[in-house]
Image (tube, rainbow, N blue to C red):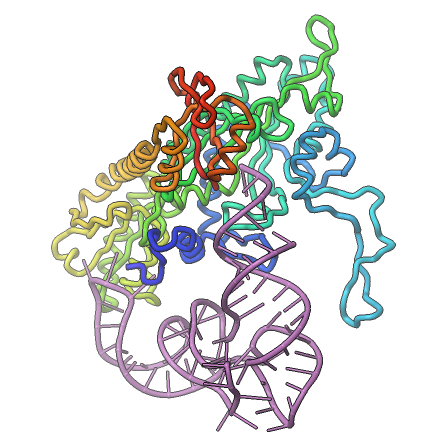
Length: 492
RNA sequence: CGGGAUGUGGCGCAGUCCGGUAGCGUAUACGCCUGGGGGGCGUAGGGUCGCAGGUUCAAAUCCUGUCAUCCCGACCA
């Protein structure tokens, strides 16, 4: 069993940090706040990317790429957006180094190489993209523009954690331009739904869809939709956001088009994104004290086969069976690894693949050769059974679906058990402290109340859920009338 | 940026109070035995003790500064 992993109960955040490193997902780098995503972690990210990219393209989007640097004058054009990010921007001020005359062998910034205009390293790309779109749009015939980019962005964070919050992270950002308000709103909703579908069907992570309050809204947006997930420690995590930007950026960057009727109008905009933060969400949704647990739909290796042998002849016999299974499994689209390295012991391999969350493990030894069986172990339940070699491919095909569903169900049960309705503020504080999770409560709709609750409890309104029934009530803090419950939680 | 903690072979740590030849576990390399859940025995290699100053005959140890990491706040996807 995983020897050195701190348990979730002992210290959840330590467990997370250790797991990310020990499962070979990522590690800290020599650059403060920036991580190295290791091959195994990147393979999971690539699977996420591939699926999302497919979903974006199926809904008519195309990929493009915009610059890393944003001239300060462009950055500040949309004031609210600029203000929102101002405090966490990295800025390029110079373009050259030179030998330091006072310090042999060292370099210094050449003071004569100061840029006339500073460049902001993008914390998000609205500014540079809208400046570009200005040149692309003249007529309603040029619309809509449906573009996505896969990129890195930099937000100078004070406290960082692998995947959850790093100064540089990878993400995709979609930026669309539309002729009408309704069309842009529909796009915003569509993308939020795509995120939800991805989270639930591929990450096996249940999410709640809803709308952000004014305080939590994206800087520069008129409306922010989101999906929120619940982690095993009872904290919420924003897993994706989709913004209706109204005409804010069109006005800031003067992006107008001639409508069918011949009027000059500002275009309507959306932007939407998910980041490598999803990796953190994936870890914290399913994994256990033995290590990572990956849903089959995102596992880089879905099945691993470990031979158990005492000598070369045995290995040769086992490999014959194993290679046949590999071929059969691959033919059905299952990714499988036959780990016949002689440099590691079987027990070590078991532990390692468990730590790395491989959904299904097969072990084949001399006894199996006699019996025509294999030992099959499920990562999610840790249960082992012997399966006839002739039946194992069918069995695994079924398991891929079953494990995927089972992980989702388990996470959904946990999530549902951790949505608690409360009717007054004492109850609110008690539930937050003792149970955690989402708290469903009435709210009077004001930012003042939201802020007071945040200051008193550290819980914020995660979202105003879409699926909530309309229910008259009174605000949990002020007692003022409220038409709907909202979900509060402490958040990542 | 404030409060706290920690920096010692690749990794995890002891040694620091009370200055006197740098140690343990693990990992690595080699050999043999092993092989159905992180194996056993033996041998070997590997450390300017975060960095820079200072005190001292002598500093991992004491003093000053500095940097980094982690935890708790403020900020945030």
